[in-house]
Amino acid sequence: MVFGTAAINCIVVTVLDIPLRKVLKRNDDAPSRVAATQTAGQEPAASAPIARSTSTSIIFDGFGFRYAEGDAPVLRDVSLIIPQGTFVGVTGAAGSGKSTLTYAINGVIPHCYPGESAGSVSVMGHDVATTPLTDLSRLVGSVCQDIDSQMVSSVVEDEVLYGLENFGVPKDQVERRLTNALEAMGIAELRHRAIDSLSGGQKQKVAIASIIALEPAVLVLDEPTAELDPASSTAVFDLLARYAEEHGTTVVVVEQKIALLSDYADTLLIMEDGRIRFQGAPADVLMHSDELLEIGVNCPRSTSLVNRLRDAGLYDGVATRNVAQACAVCKEVLA
Ligand SMILES: Nc1ncnc2c1ncn2[C@@H]1O[C@H](COP(=O)(O)OP(=O)(O)OP(=O)(O)O)[C@@H](O)[C@H]1O
Image (tube, rainbow, N blue to C red; front, side):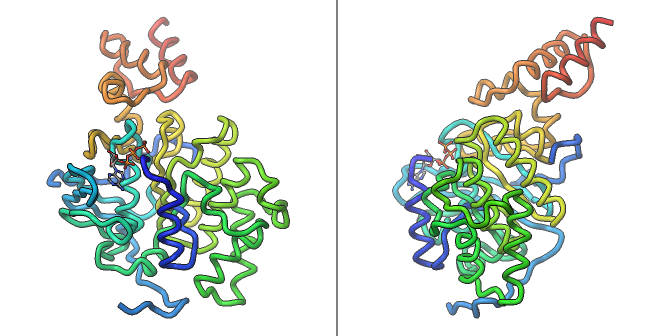
């Protein structure tokens, strides 16, 4: 992103008096659950529920957006339907519009960043443009890339409690939600730790726990593993995916590492210059490794190798995601 998440965070903190946590399984080759379409007041009481439709989570209908300060649209004619409970991975070159896409879901656009829109985005049946940010925040939980900018407390327990209290969660639910969220992220033992004393991976888990304690229907995360090593990245995705699957939560995660995304996502969205260039199950999208490379998305070399074998007529199966799968294909080809 070219603008700081801290700035957005401040805006939303001011509006909601809560930190913006930009919304937020190991893949078993599940079929895609995202369907593409080609055409693509007054605040409620603190604990007032907002209606949630149960089947369709997010709909982009010919959505486009130009920032007020920008010369050209940064999202163009985006149309897609995301059923509830889908794990969506978003990737693409720098500046392709990934973060802006997430802002269109969590309401930062148009509520915090003015600009010119086309089409519409709805979440759980609510038009993002006309639904107050306070209501949207009950549907969509967000986790920023810059974790430190969104932490508001000095102790883990207080960080989670802060959101629960601001959402007016009934007192008799608070302990259950706090405990469950910490356990879901595997950090129950960190409950009384100072946040300053945590590693990057642990802080990331605290940030996600703070959001899932609010039980949003949709989680949006922007590059949650950007500063983590491979093992911590996998750990965060494992916990996130398990939680989402158990609770039927929709996850939209922006991530540079397509291999990591492919291991967890039901559907990949590949952004290019504000448009969705490819969307589908990881195995289908990874078939296009050469075109992905041209638009700045690096597939694993083993994926490209297997695609070359297919191009050469030596293999006719699906794209592989990792070295182990590619080895199996090579053994088959050489047998
Ligand atoms: N507040 C803003 N005002 C004007 N233009 C903006 C603003 N925020 C982003 N942009 C522009 O919108 C385009 C898309 O930015 P965005 O952050 O959505 O891309 P991205 O794919 O997430 O990039 P990155 O991977 O670098 O984070 C970029 O050209 C960027 O310069």
